Image (cartoon, rainbow, N blue to C red; front, side, top):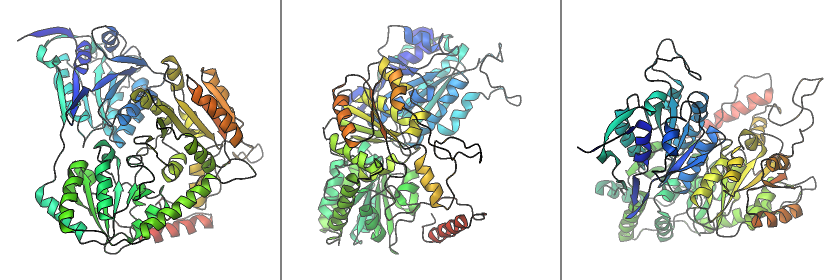
Length: 621
């Protein structure tokens, strides 16, 4: 048997460099590169292997471990999960910084390979710098924190263990149903240990994404369900996008006169002005989608996790006869809402169901309702887009102006946390496919700038705009330096509304007085954070990193800055001052929160009673 003697880290690099993926007959390289921050636990092992010139993996130096994890996720998500990047760090704090990013990837079903360094397998020099010691179990290290947020986890304590670990990592990373964060822990000493690896381990390996067909009996059941219903309603999830089933969903809805709402992950699969597109579904959704959902007698979830936001905490469906049908590769998601599950590829399933329903001559019983609710919502959006306030700029007005400015086909927006994903799902009019990139399964503050870099790496010929608030910017913006260092131009649209205003709204909606959600000075007399707003110039912060920065307090200043942004060849930031509390409101939706049932504040107790009244109207499972 032919073998190659090399270190475990060198073998890992060579293995990753020879992984390919095949989708619908199109073959492409799977692992694009590695992002990392070197420390003593990784630099002389995996770092040495990456420094060699015998591979094609690009290495990008990050500035924050969570940030580089987000870059990798943004890249894989924009590539529709067909290309990935690996992320590496030293042991201890560097590794733990990546745990949040791993959770973000897994919650969103996005493949990211995490390669944190680990403590010595031999234990001879223990405790080493940055080591967490547990006296009851020496097998536990900081990297065990990755277990709850990983879809596959392994520790390579001997160099030969790499072979089964790496193949299992690829199994999960390429699994369209069970993908997410994969963590391979790399003990510092084992990275440098040698082994005679079989040459076949390094041969080109092609992973085929196989489209799963509908079981014939399940198909009959699904068609029977739809044919028996008068007012079906579809929820378009991210699985429609990843399966490239947009055309099939359009045909299905047009053929049978069935409207659809969008999840955050599904938005942008079908353009905003499609005749059956009701816009966002659920808590952050439109009045059009939520009104139709109320009366629907069948909810068809396609490629969606059916989380509390898109179902309004299982409250959205008022029809006593409503039933649920799901199409999903992931059986865990398919069984939600007590649905009849079709475990199949979205594209194949929609094709099969369409063919069978055509034979029956089916059409829904909607009359003018679909057009009416869409027109009503269009008028509401136009109103929010043109709202003028004497005190300053509203968030919805600014978002509308940006939407009109970003009409070019090559513009992608990235959003993740706060009130901006809510406003964007409701109001953003997607004019090109895959141009709306939202991380909302984890709604991780700080994702936007790093995620935008990943999107730009995936689509370098397109303009990418990270749309975020001041709270999220303060959480994590250091990857701006990486964008400058690597000449990866992104555009940051920062809406400064003086704090965590999304949560501030939620707090006050439950009868709680304003408390610690705005960026205000502490008052000496009351010792509360109720003083004046803290004046912050985010444009100056970014300018210090080398970013081309602008500020705006009016629509005219936004227009002026935008002309310069679009002509810039380096990363830009536009700091826009927004009036607090000027985001859009909920439309025919409800969200369950755990409001205190006993309080010294009467308004809080009233809010808790109202919550319980609505809970009684929601489906229990």
